[in-house]
Image (cartoon, rainbow, N blue to C red; front, side, top):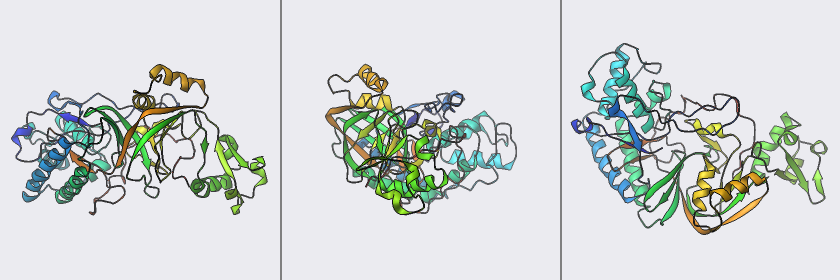
Length: 432
């Protein structure tokens, strides 16, 4: 989530006053069920490091101005020599001692994540843990307060590379400087995050699952026009080729187990009648029954007309929302806390309050709700930005569009909610 910090020491720094944003460690699944992963709110002491939610949208004039100021601050950091790399720190925890702890302290001080007055002790104390947690939040990593390989990798991205990211993303942010609407949705692909915005303020925040590196979510402007409750899912031809047929070659019961029916002009076809080691399987239509426990779209699909055939939806594997790495779909976007999201989308549609949303879901039947005033939806690609109070965020350039070689932190992920195996289901994605 986007959040802001109040720190008494940032004024002491002649450089970036940086803060916290991003996704904290999520709760694991409840006793084997794939429960909705949520963001924890238990921010670390000391009190001066505690944070609050940010309400300014990432696409706003305030964010543009703040990011322009951060470019200047990072130029100053670069001119001062940047920061020194950190090594041998990926397993540090509270109570650890040694030169690597001192290196982490200095790294955190340079970017304003640790008060210089906290001292130069070689002990990994609660102040260092709080600073690490702030740093992790600003880089979209699980806020554990303990060092990890991903955290160390993020710390070691050079200052001049971070400056280039800021310069690149200022241009992107400026391109959205016009009137985006009174109510609109922002989906930031690198952050895997959805914001709903009303009257210039963020109303709700949702973790998201977005396109894989080889099946990228598109950058586009569209509108949310319709909600489909309890939808069936027709498997796109691209996924039939890439996923369905290979799965059937490995497990002949896969379609039956996942309640996917094979359809032709003459009715339903038995999976046993098809030669899965040939291209015969590509000649049919595949449709998955509705059902929150097994349907890849979960309980709802949000239609956003576009030439890419992608949409937004719920999922039956919600544990992924607690992961740092959420680039897992075939182009579509899975939305955390989808009931809250669609209730907001339907806010101005007569007869569709939260009670009616719940009734439609619980009915188990296909119900369509047309949004009275279609809501603008912006799928964006922002890897670096700052908040109006001078706090900066960075995310991995997952699709390599920044024009610089930013070392990725995903080589050392710190997954939380998906520590257990996920059920093997298809992902809705690029439809042909």
